[in-house]
Image 1 (cartoon, rainbow, N blue to C red):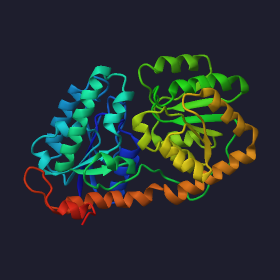
Image 2: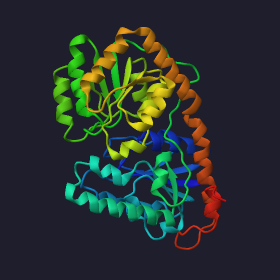
Image 3: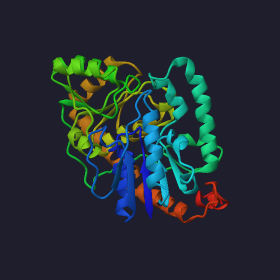
Image 4: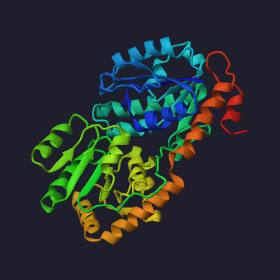
Length: 380
C-alpha cells in the first residue's frame, strides 16, 4: 500500500504523525510519502520515507503553505492508495484528482473549540469561523474517511467513525524510581497550556533547589518570558525536541506537569503527555481537565490541582519531594495503568488495518464513498 501523509501545521516530527502512525505503516511494510515542513523546522527526514518539503503554516501566514501543499498533493498523492491528512485546512486545498483517492482526515482536535486559544484569530471573527469549521467538518464527513483521536470527538459528527487514541510506547519493564529534584513538561508551550503558570511555578521552586524543565516549542508571545526565566536560571527550556528523545530526558523526574487551562477544546481531549508521564513512571500533576482526571484519579497516578494556580502546583511538587514512598507509589500505579491500557502497539495494528481496509474499498467517482463505507467503519 502506498500512503501519502501530509501536514503543513504540525512539526514533521510530531509524535502521533511520525513516531506512531508513520512508524506503524513502515513496520507493516507499506510505502510512505511524507509532505511536511522539513526545512522550516530544520528536520532531516527519515531514510525510510519519501519526503516532500513545503512551507509551514503559522498564525495568519497560511496561504503560501496551502498553495504549496496543493501542488505537492497534485504531484505525489494522485497515485497513492491512501491520502492521510492531519490539518483541516488541507481539506480545502485538495486537488480535484486527489479527491477521487481514498482520503482520510485524522481528527486531532476540536478545531472550532480550539479557536478560543489561538491568539492570532481576531476575537470578532471567531463565531463566524466556528460556523465555517463545523460546516467543513460535516461536508468532509460526507466525502472522506475520518479517524478520531478521542472518543469525545464523536458528538461533532453525524456518523460513527473509528477512534485511534493518541497513546504512547510503554516499556516492558517498569522504570527506575522518580528523583526529588525535577518537575518536567513535554509539549507545546502556550498560555492556554499553562506556560505562564509553569514559569511562575519555576520561580517559586527554584530557591528550594527544584528545577522545572520545559521541553517543547513555544508561541511567539511566550518565548520572551521563557528566555528571560532561563537567563535568570529559574528554569531550563530545551525548545522542540523529537518525542523519543524528549521522553528520555524526562525519565526519572519527580513530577510531570499538565497544567492546561479550562478551554473548550481541552474538555474533550486527553493530554497525551499525561499518559507519557505515566508510561515512564513519573507522577502526574494535572489541572482538573476532565479526560485527565478520569485517568489520574482512578489509577492513583498523580495529583490534581486547581486551574490557573501555580502556588497549588508548587505545593503539590513539594508534597512529592517530601514523601519518597508517595512518589514511588504514584509512579508504579501510573506505569501499570499505562502498560495495561495505553500501549501504542495495541492501537497501531488497528490504525494500519483501517487504512488497509479503506484502500481496498471502491469509491464512486468524485471521492464520495459508496455503501462499503458503513461496512468499513463497522456500522453494518
